[in-house]
Amino acid sequence: MTENFSRLDHALAAYRTSEPSDALRIRIIAVAPRQRVAGRLRRWIAGAGLGLGLAVSGVAGVAAGYTLGNPTAVRAIGPSELDTGQFSALADPVDASASG
Image (cartoon, rainbow, N blue to C red):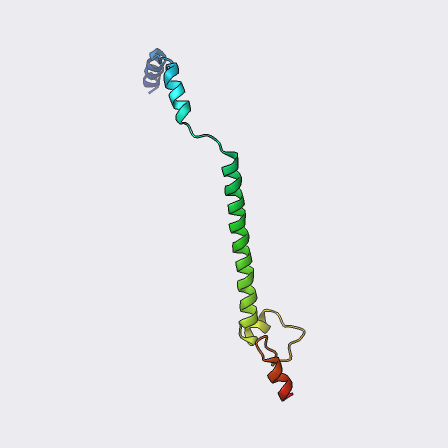
């Protein structure tokens, strides 16, 4: 097995490569992508904005669920100081004062 590696090592050592021409190097460098600072900054701001938007929409969903949720389920999550058993965020304040 080591004979095969030895022969491969000798074959690779005998292989000579030539340096690429200057014209080829210039062509490769000309078509290579360049780093754009403004584009990177824009992408970072866009990503941060999208992340912030997703976070805000998640908080809004939790708040809407807490407000519109079934009072029994909401009390199981965390009872309110104002909870009298009949309190609802959707109750009509005019109707509540007229009946009470």
